[in-house]
Image (cartoon, rainbow, N blue to C red; front, side, top):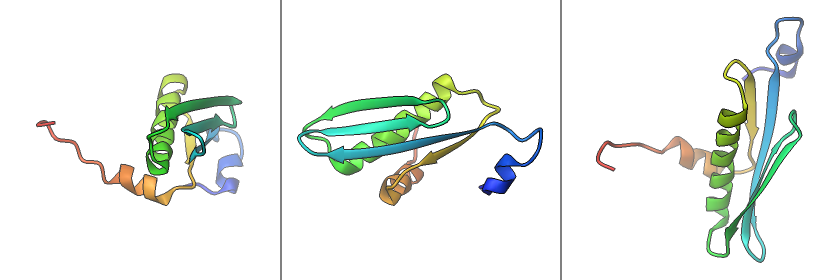
Length: 99
């Protein structure tokens, strides 16, 4: 991960995009994804049965989709999440050709 100084140093420094994600549950469960650099905000309802962990995990995945769909591969991206559990759950995902 680059420091703030490394991200902003001189010409030739890649453009940096910062995204924030959150999931919460009140009357229903929902997620918010916000692209600070682009001013892009998504608000997604997941209904009343999704858990907060599912919402936070979905928020990160929705953010990754937005970056892939609207971003360009040569750009640098930071995804900020307040859920270490969701990040670890995504890191532990394994795929199998049997599934």
